[in-house]
Image (cartoon, rainbow, N blue to C red; front, side, top):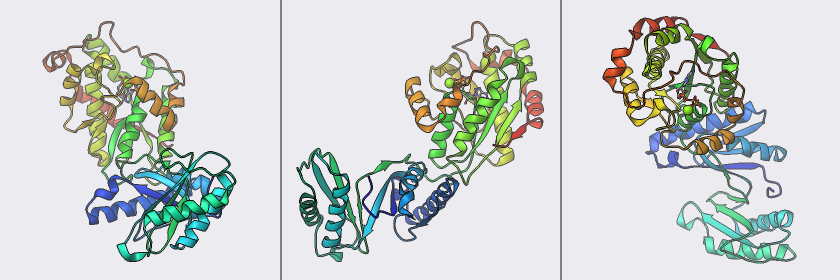
Amino acid sequence: MHPPGADTVLVRYGDVGVKSSKVQRDMERALRENLGAMLARRGIDADVTGERTRPRVRVDPEELGRATDAAADVFGIVSASPCSVVEPTINAISEALAASARVDYEEGSFAVRARRAGERDDHPFTSEDLEREGGQAVWDAVPNPEVDLENPDHTYYVECRSEEAFVFTEKRPGPGGLPLGTQRPLVALLSGGIDSPVAAWEVMRRGAPIVPLYFDFEAYGGVDHVARTVESARTLAEYAPNHGFDLRVAPAGAAADRLVETTRETRMLSLRRFMLRVAEGLAREVGAVGIVTGEAIGQKSSQTSVNLATTDPATGLPVHRPLVTRDKQEIIRQAREIGTYEAATIEAGCNRIAPDYPETNATLETVEAAEPDLTPLVEETLSALETVAL
Ligand code: ATP
Ligand code: MG
């Protein structure tokens, strides 16, 4: 429940706040723009301000809940609070606290937590004064009050600045990280499975826009492979309203044919090396500076720590693997949270490229010895890249 009359969403950030002042100013600007774009994308009419202070959103009180949800999906934001803004005086703050308690306090215990931000002598009271007087106001406002400072059922927060004070009851967690667009883009290998969209989301969370690339192995995959990748790319795009992207699709049936003909135990490793080379070619074309995959150590035979060492040398670009240490269950939980899990459950044909006995302990030499010249396959694939608008 929001405090009565609340019309503002206050946002907090983490890593943005520890930057030098110039970088921080740029990041704050990016954060405000991204926040504005997210609100617009969801059809919420709002004002994003905060030139010299922390960003905040002013909206019609009717839209406050949706605006808070929107803010909590913006990269860089650690938490968002729907709040009412009042004069920075003990009276005004106490009144707002009491009003808030009257609408949401029926039973249980409470605490008031106050913080003063700003110059020391801005106000003739301390945060302890605010907590004591504000606590009294809440006490007087409800029928059966009980104070519990350790583990309260209701917490009423006050943040007092020089010019204004914020009263709120909720800190909705956001994704944290850095504002999208404050890093250079990365090519994200998106397979339509569970892992790769989570990996892509993780680098977006660190500020890097993505250029998603899907390999369509044609006869080797199912017809719905493309559909589920499009779905997960669409979900990711919802997090990037002003850094939108299309999905690149690489027709790779012929390349798979060639690898199936020429390789056996090391086939999947050559296939991955092929994918990395195509990704590198695309990255050079679009100005991306690295490649992202959903691999995790030991998740599959091609992802043993030994085998991972045979794939990276295929490209000069860094290969980022945000999920490298994650268990599948953790990845699934996160996929559900960010909304990409659904698409991954769309039925798709099984992958018939894998050999019966894939090598788990390959060396670069054995992979290279078995591998056909990848260059013509890579060039052919790059020239046939398609773009699917989302
Ligand atoms: P996912 O990891 O998305 O669930 P997966 O578990 O089937 O798919 P692998 O097939 O081992 O994983 O692939 C590992 C990584 O390689 C994926 O996370 C993804 O980044 C990339 N990848 C695999 N197949 C494709 C594809 N057809 N197109 C693009 N990238 C792919
Ligand atoms: Mg995987």
